[in-house]
Image (cartoon, rainbow, N blue to C red; front, side):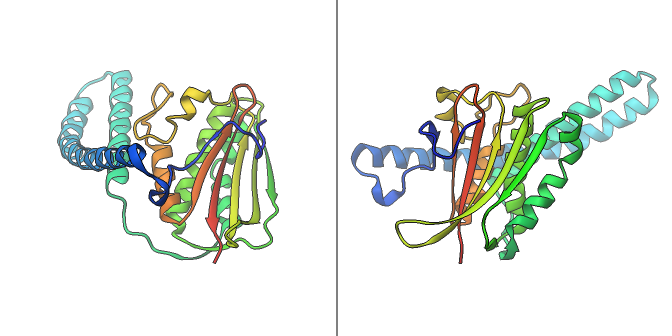
Length: 250
């Protein structure tokens, strides 16, 4: 299991104020690529979404007339998968407006974990809560922050497999700038992440999963950034991974 003090980690891109010279040019190129990617993704997603409506209706009519139940299951499953991918693309390219309010992070974490209890029990995964933060009230969009938690928890459950363990923790820290931050960590005993994968982990559409979209962690990072936070991952092959979200406490 990795620890919070591990040196093998990746974190947020450098802030603009500290980027100079050739790094600044690369920073601008990256922003331009991401902007174009967002426009293309949104355009493609809308077109695919519109086409899926007609295709789904037509396929349903054909399947109702046929007797191939196995084909019915396959087609419906694949249409559902494509629709889910397009929905992820739209969410990445054009997220809905946020509604910030005071929320208790511990309650939100408990709710997120509860949604995965059946899946964890089926895989014999043990869960430990280490809520060390005495104050967990922050200003956030509850729905989007829960999405970030769920993305990380789902990845952790998949990484652990059977008979593994998850540790969900919180702690309050004070930075050198004097600001208090709430650190939320999700640690797993999975196979870990290679250094080569760590370098690209938060890039849109990058994935090592057979049926992955490569958007979950990109969306998670953006949600965290829009909450004035940062996210980093510490991992070592064979020793699990720890994702840490750090949010300002008002």
